[in-house]
Each structure stands twice: as C-alpha cells, then as structure tokens.
Image (cartoon, rainbow, N blue to C red):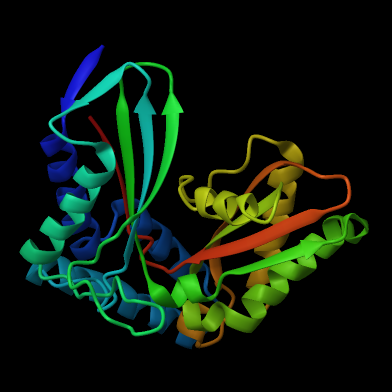
Length: 280
C-alpha cells in the first residue's frame, strides 16, 4: 500500500490550474503555428497570429490567456493500492481549486446557482471523474473548461438506422450551428454509444486525448478523419472570421450500446485547450 498526503493533491491541482490559465501548452502553440501555415484565408491567418500574440503577452505578463478562467474538470486515475492520508481526494481537489483561484486571481466563473445565480466566489465545485486502476499511482488531468465552448455541446439519441452517415451529419451540424461561438480553431470530442448519461462523458474523455492522436480503432480513426475534413470545409475558420481551419482535431470515443439506440454527444474545446497531466 502506498500513502499519499491529501495536501500533495491540493498543491498539484493548484499548481496545474495556475499553469494552464497563464501559459499556453507548447504542443498547442505548435498546433496553432502549423494551422496558421495551412490557413488559406488572410483573415483566418490574422486571427491565429493574434491568438499566438495573446498567449505570448499572457505568459510574459502573468495574465490569464482568457478572461474566462473556466470550470475545473479533473480526470482522476487512482491506483487501487493507494491510500490518501489526512483527507480525501475529492476535498483535496476542491481545496486546490480554491487555492489557485485566490493566489492566481482567477475570475470567479464558477459556481453559480442555476436559478439565483449566487456565486461561491472560489470556482468550486470542480467536476471530478474517477477511474480506479491497478497499481500504486495517482494521475490527475486538470482542464480549465470555458463556458463558450461548453455551451456548444450537444447530445442526440439517434435511431440505429441513422448509421455512420447520421452520426457524421449530427456532429457537423452541431459545429455549423455553434462552432463560431466556441473560439475556434476547435478541439472536438465525440462520444458514441453507451446511454444518455455516458455518451457526454465519452465526448469529454475524448478531449483528454493528445491532440491529433487517432483512435486505436481503425473504424473510429477513419470517422475522425472524415469529420475533421468536413468540419474544415464549413468555412467558419479561426475565431469565426472565415477560413479553412475551423478545427485542429476530432477525437471519437465509443462504447457498446442498446440495439434500439445510438447516443451521440459532442463536446468542444477552444483554441487554448487548457489542460495539464500531473502524476504523483
């Protein structure tokens, strides 16, 4: 049995949130620089140049990449041979979010009551997804999820007869209707199968895959490729200014479903894709 102090988890989450809100991930910077070279529209290229300039100023001046410092979403892979001392994982994560909000002066984007809109003032609660895995490790993947890209999400319970063509049409229509407001170039997660509750979770999980990494399933990998091509032909372009780079990546995650249903969910990330993996 391995023991990990709850305070280590708090410190790791706080550090990750500070990092991702103020400094663009090097891989995302490379993706945007490559996208600028591919973009055929002068306005689209200008939009990407401004995004890169914004990231440079944010990092140099310790300013948030975006005024929307996001909803904290944490994927936890907890080894079954790990014991958390002096606390529990959930509360340790929430404490890390509170600490980062205060120390890094993050905007209080979360959490408001859905009716009264009263704000907790510390960006809690974070959304936490737990996976119990073999071993003695603890991995945290921390994401700052902006409201604009989250609002562009969609779920549809398609009939099985809709097939792959119906799935693709729903995904593309979702981007066509909402993509410009999600701050493209986008990272797009698609969840297929399961049921009403698991399809959106699969779409969210897809966003945690490294950008541009195809699915290990060749059928899904081919769907990802086709979706990316179709979406980039919509003409939305960077920041909705028009162009050929509306999305940088499409990732599809799937699981078996009932013979009478075909759940499909879409979840988006903006160009910043603020995410960091921490291993304890």
